[in-house]
Image (cartoon, rainbow, N blue to C red; front, side, top):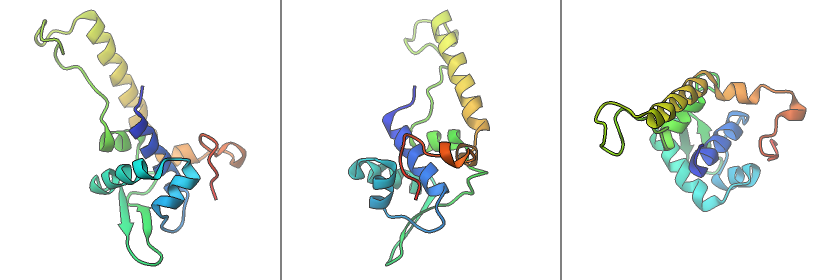
Length: 140
C-alpha cells in the first residue's frame, strides 16, 4: 500500500519527533533500523520538502522543521511519493469517466488520504511507553 521509501521516511520522522536534539543520519539509521545509504536519500527529500532541517557542525544532524502535532502522515507521504489518484482512465480508454475498477481504486486512495491527513506524527507517538516502539526500533 505504501512504498518502502514512504515507510523509511515515516520511521525517520517518527523517531525525530521524539528527540530533543539533532540526530545524525547514522543515529537515525541505527535506531530506526534503516539502511544508511537509502536513508540519506530519503532525508535529502525531507529537507527539500521543508519537513526536516539539517544542521552542520559538531552537534549537527536532523531535526523536524514542523511540530509533530502539525505534521500529518499525508504530508510526509506527499513529500516523498504521493498517493496515486485516478482522475481519468489511466489506460486512456474511458477519458474522464472511470471504469468501476478505477473508481474503486480512486475511492480507496481517497479514503487513505483522508485518514492519513487526519493523523499527525504526534498521534503516532502518543501511545503508552510499553507500546511506543514502531517496528521494534529503540526510542532512546
